[in-house]
Image (cartoon, rainbow, N blue to C red):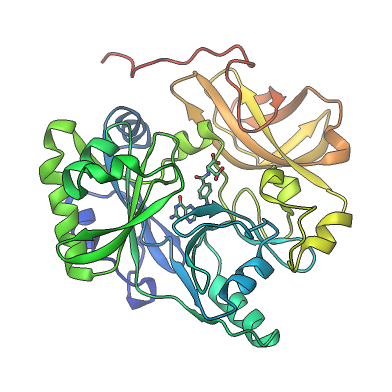
Length: 377
Ligand code: THG
C-alpha cells in the first residue's frame, strides 16, 4: 500500500493546483512547505516529452524571499560569496548562499529588480529566517518578506514559441538568465529565461491567484499543436544535465567547492560577504562526483565502496534512457577517491563496478553517444 500525504494549509496552495490535479498528477514532493508535483505519466514518459515538446510546470515552491531597503544589495551580498557589484537590473544569478563557516544555506537564483529591491528564488530551506536574522543582527535597512509569488516554468524546445504566443515576440529578445516585466491581462509579471532543465525555457513569476489559472489554461489552449503537456523538474533530465539539488546533493555541511560550484564563488572580489574568509581557508573534505554504471541496476545501498572500504554515499541517481547507463551523483571523501578510477556499489544482484567521472557528465568524453529521439514504440 502506498501511504497518502495529508494535505492542509501547512502545505499552502498554488494558483495551478486544480489544473495540476485535473492533469492527473501522480506524485508530489514537499518543498519549501509546499507541494511540488513530480510525476504525471511516468518519469521516463515525462522525460521524453520534456526533451521533445513543451511542458508547463507548477514550481510555486520556488519561493521568493524579497529584500527591500536602501541596504538590500548589501544584505544579499553578505549572504552570497558571488560578486554582485556589477549586477544589472533584470539580471538573474545562480548563487550559493553560505554561512560564516562557508557551509551552504541554499542555492537560489538571485534576481535584481533595483539596488534596493532583490528576490531570492530559493531552493528548499528557510532562507527568510536566515535573512531576517542577518538584517536584524547587522542592523541593515533591509526588509525581508516572502510575498505570494508562484513561479510557473515553461520548459522544452518549443517553450519559446509557446511563450511568444502568450506574451508576444518581445520574449525572444530575453537572453539567458535575463528577465523583463511583461504585461499579462493588465498585470505586470516578471518573465525570465531560466528554469531547472537544460531543454531551454522561461519562468513566469505569477503574482495573482486568479490570473495564474487563466495563464495555465491559455498556455494549454495555445500550445495544443506544440503538444504542450504538464510536467515538473524531471529527475532523469536534471541528472543527465548535472543540475544539483539542495538538501540532497549538498547541504549545510558542504561548501560550494565541495559540490563543484567553484565558478559561483568570487574569492578575490573586494566584497563584504559573510563566508569569504572561511571559504579562503577551509579545506575541502568531500567531493561530489559522477559515477557511471553500464547497465540498468537497482541500487539497494546508498554507500560507495572500494574493496570493502566506505568512500562516501550516493546523493542522487537515475537510469538514463538516452545513454543506456545508470548515472549517479555521490558525495565522497576527497582523500579516499584521489587517483581512483572505479568504485563499487551494491545492487539487488550484487556488487558492481562504477566509473568515476567529473560533474557535469561529459558524455562525449565517456564515449557515450545518446539517442537523438525516443526509441520507437
Ligand atoms: N528557477 C527558479 N528558482 C529556483 C530554481 C529554478 N530555485 C530553486 C532551484 N531552482 C535553485 N537551483 C538552481 C540550480 C541550477 C540552476 C538554477 C537554479 C541553473 N543552472 C544553470 C547551469 O548550471 O548550467 C545555469 C547557471 C549559470 O551559469 O548562471 O539554471 O530553476 N526561479
